[in-house]
Image (cartoon, rainbow, N blue to C red; front, side, top):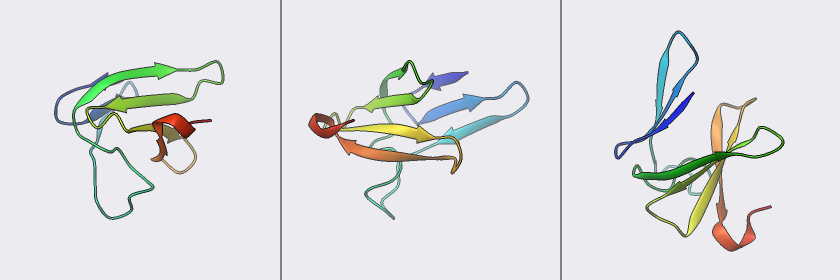
Length: 76
């Protein structure tokens, strides 16, 4: 389960809560803002996140347990 909050994105796997927050270390990765506006799951079960910095969307990479940022108009 995924929960969008004003202080980050929360994933609950049935046992543990994990909080994802924005970071400035690598601007191509992670969430672009902590304020989560929307989350969706597409037909491939990929999780997409729209933050208050709506210039970017982020797609969750399950294998690497991280988010990849896309400029909103260039998202695949």
